[in-house]
Length: 112
Image 1 (spheres, one colour):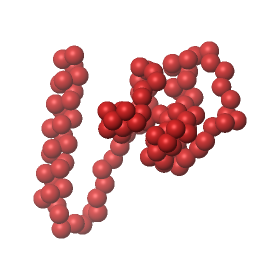
Image 2 (cartoon, one colour):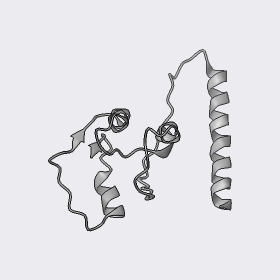
Image 3 (cartoon, rainbow, N blue to C red):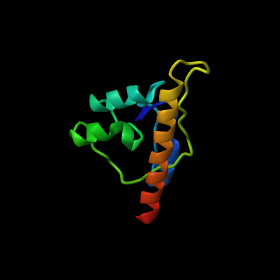
Image 4 (cartoon, helix red, strand yellow):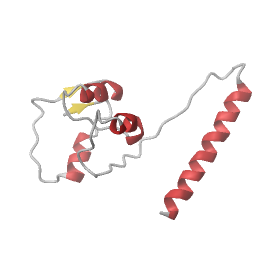
């Protein structure tokens, strides 16, 4: 297993394979998710990643989802920028776009 700093493997295994016996002897640890993904693409093991991060690799056949299990960790992402910036208008545009996309995604998900 290829681990990143989020260390979601224990939660994932409890959810998808509750009775599985695991060993940490052959696990590899990375401090960034991207490194674990790159290692998985290189055939070095199994990585956990947000589907959006690996969608292009899945579409290109470089990665294959092993389980249908979806782990919801409650982790969030933040978009940050300097307090003082000369790009305030552009940042406001991106902020509004992200909000519109989030609302649209929720509406699509609730309709499914």
